Amino acid sequence: MEAFWESFRLDPRQPGHAPMRASDADREVVRVVLADAYADGRLAREEYDDRLGALYGSKTLGDLPALVADLVLPDGPAAAPAALAAADLRTRGARKWRKDVEESLAAFLVPSIICTVIWIAAAGRGFFWPAFPMLFMGINLVRTVVNREAVIEHEVRRLQEQAAGDTAPELPAGRDDPDQAKDG
Image 1 (cartoon, rainbow, N blue to C red):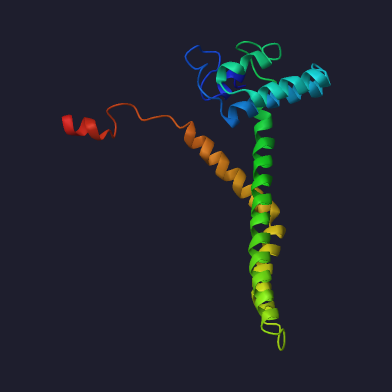
Image 2 (cartoon, rainbow, N blue to C red):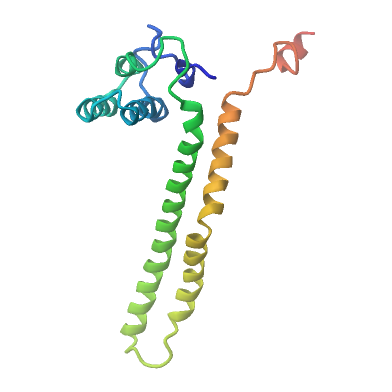
């Protein structure tokens, strides 16, 4: 199992990394440990809330180790960040879907209102032509709402590929290195 501290891009315990700004991903790693500790009964609600407030108020990597020092082993495995990573990816996927629904709803409402106002301004007589743009934009809205799982799974795959790309090993020096080819 991956060590907890290896879940960070930069180890927050290292003095050289401590002044670096903490990312949302760094805070999320700590939040998962705090939530697990609270769920396991290792933190009282008040202490959990206090630590969570301190976590979201943290600015640097150096602020993070103190929040979990008594919850994880110094070099040992985390409570379960690897197992919760899949749940976190699904949460991010669901967030992406909600954003897509909001965008589709706005793309439906704004033109529909504009077209209806134009129709009313033209004395509102005759055929209700705004129904056509509303129909097409409504189809997109319904498609987005109905395809919830597909959107979530697509986002999860994208995030997994992005994470795999972030951790891909670099080529050893001398292989496919354009600078080396010029010298040799």
